[in-house]
Image (cartoon, rainbow over all chains, first blue to last red; front, top):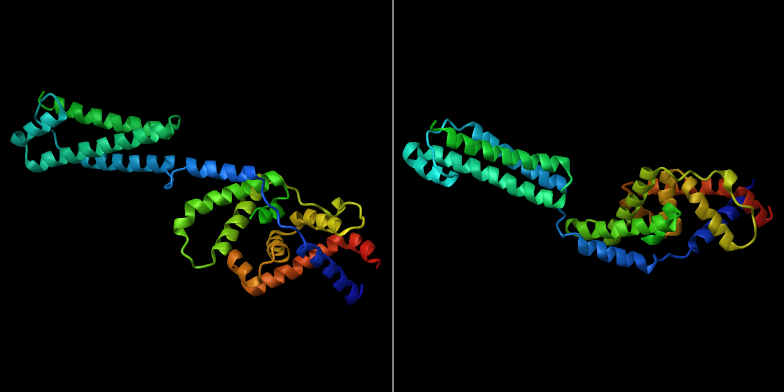
Length: 147
Length: 147
């Protein structure tokens, strides 16, 4: 094949491609985009982000909790226990307990939000149960401490 | 955007899905756009990546072989149709440059930015893409040009 025919064929292809019309999507696409954009929050929140935050909060809570020594008080609730603890234990120990319970409560709150968005996600459910169990263990420890 | 998506997907429904995805991605990531490149370049990059990701994920598009070329007949619209049907059979690198340059009319410098390649690489890919396209269309072109 000579060069002239190659050039002629390439020209033919070039003419065909440059004259291809720009295509427009049907209007339904714009409606779908609008609906999708308005449905999603501006800062996307993903289930795993929530689960991760909850797990992180729980880890902090467990770490702080593991450093707590046995507590020799008995009272009606955590706040009362912590108030009375000022007389029974050092201020530092009380601060540890407050920090621990705050971490557990934050984990519970995070996992509740995650559950609201992903009620059937097993890992989110497990994180929520673990957070609640951590809180129950702390309260049990506080109540049982004087026995 | 829709045209580019359609040239890659060869299917209106898929092109609509890609267009919708791209708009949502642009909406979500707009705050992260640093202005290092033109907005259109950024959007083209998202479009090309979204379309190719979808193609890779589905893996249901079979490359069109030379045997699938329709019977030659007269008329420029038919050549356009043939070229469009041949695009998926081009290797990915050729296909991207061919669509962006010869159909969408972008410059090599812009294509380089979009695809993260040099201008020289873009020119080289285009040369090969055109040669491959010409080979695929040879029977039709010979008939059409009377060679």
